[in-house]
Image (cartoon, rainbow, N blue to C red; front, side, top):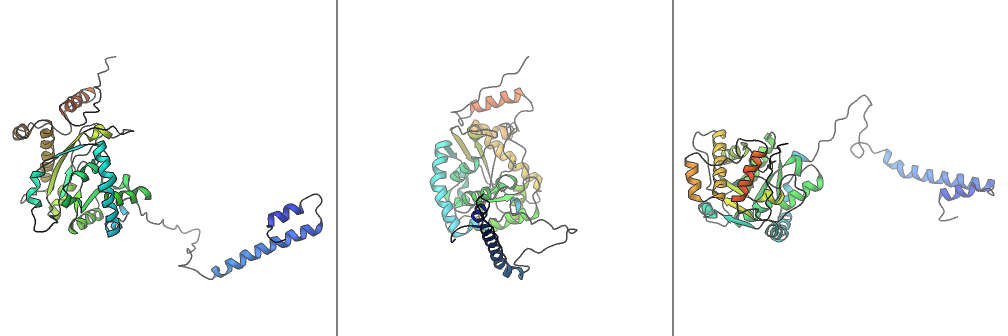
Length: 351
């Protein structure tokens, strides 16, 4: 009967009152379906590689298809006109509202960038922003704090093993942040070439010299990637100090807690003649350290401390355990950032 499937014929044939005729009808229907499937698949049998995956003997180990995620993810599409237009809407809309609501940044030090912004056209030369790193919201705060001429052509160097480990995360990072993947453990030649090319195309770059977020509220030693890139491309380094973002959503936090932040831009740096990467990297770290002291005190006090070599280290005092946490509480007490959420001090466990 029209419209009935093979399974219905078989069930009918298996009924107690079913006759031999029903069984024959079911068998004939099954044969008809099987023949139809074979007829439909037969034309494909004559097509081999490259229309079908080539076969291989069992003794041959077929290499895996190279991953398109991580450091190999191609972000070129994110810098095309349509993606740039969509990112502009995201930055000026949801991101702007979120940063203002959650972080409420106070931006200072922009006067130190005036000479770089004085150009004949509306597009200044590419630069490399090198801030400290405490939270995932650092990137959003930086994008909204950077002057508009650089913001239009801004690329973010993001950890390949975190932001590009899944296709949806990689696509979102590339579209919303214009992020490109970098290997933060060992920068490869391909990663350097990718960063060099985006700077050569007129894009500025945000790169975190620490390589990752602070695990305990204090800073970490700077790696030489930003210094090396600046020396090879000629793009000046702009040191930046972010304060308060760790209190809002630090590493290990499970929820956002709105607060205030401070973004302080420093004087642009370029490598001296004959200076190697290590010494230039030390100067970059010292500049961010001085900005951290200026955030807690004032320009004059920070300058005196820097001149006398007494600037408080980003990594904190040479203590461990509760004493370092106590010093962190003192630092946060002096800071105007994160004032809405100050963590309670950790008292020592005396047993």
